[in-house]
Image 1 (tube, rainbow, N blue to C red):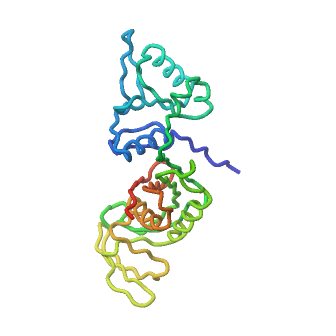
Image 2: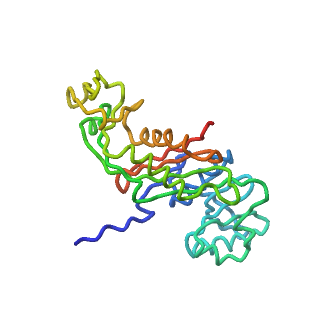
Image 3: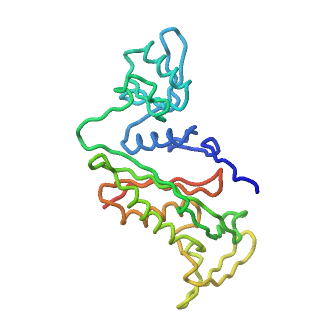
Length: 271
């Protein structure tokens, strides 16, 4: 029996709101956090050292530099900055395997006693769903077809007692919402021609011709807007938001359609 392929971080593409193509999910999370806090940043900042050479730092903000530590080379770069530019304020974030090798713990974690903004993300095999949809405005996708998609959810907000939200509670809420989407047919509500007590009649003239479909109501999900993966992400946020604790201030939803494409939508919660 053939084994399942190993999915590496490099198999995904992470793009921030500025259009920067990032190397890892950690970098994307930092970019999203900075954007959420209205903190402007420059990605892949070229820092000039006193010997005339330059190094590329992951993030430059008004308050200092942020370097994501993912390997031994990152540690060398961080130490070089500390040695040659001791006046620079630089913070290291990354995997404990590597950040633990950095002795200056004050440069790894900055905190005070005021309420902290934190984020968590949740992935689980149960956060997947099978669905069908039609995108009449996209020729290739204007026929009935389906996907198996997986979901990752990121929650951002004010921590209480060093905790944003209990993982068990968050997982239960997310699973309840994703279950609503499983084995459903998604379509823009504007293509609804008529309905009776048990069925929708969907009709539109698309690139492949006229479609006239009758579907049971309990298998269909009508959306405000096209049934794109971006709109599905937004719909999940809409269903999640009222169920989340009051201290959660923003929600990000990733939906992956396979290994190399998907959508990420992040939204503030207005209560």
